[in-house]
Length: 138
Image (cartoon, rainbow, N blue to C red; front, side, top):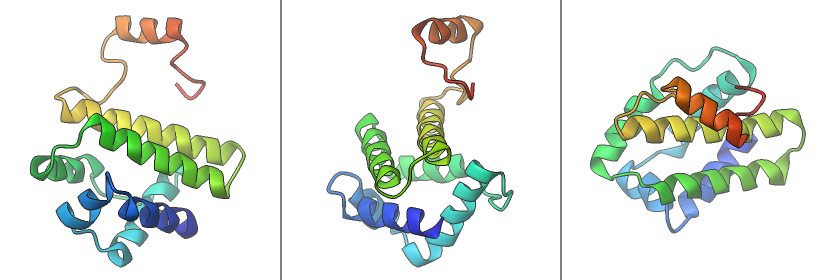
């Protein structure tokens, strides 16, 4: 897990669009952050239960200092997907990309004042089902 997470953050820190958010705004210390993010992804992918923080609160605090826009989330996802694809293949790799999309979408919705759920109403769920936007993980 450490290889995946560290290589992602090295790419993200170096990215011209989102790198400054990590380095200048958040002033993230990778040595400190890396074990936390490994716990996060191990919990997300393998139900390890080792991550016990509130990721939304951290992103909300960051958004208050530097509004996180759609382009920031899209770039984060593009870097994450490219990083996963460069190192791994198979069901867990696909789940890592799916979960990243879900997490990013939830944070975006919550930053915009929503609940975080893509299914705030039954009509939303039905529309997403018709459009084929709901995957087998629900």
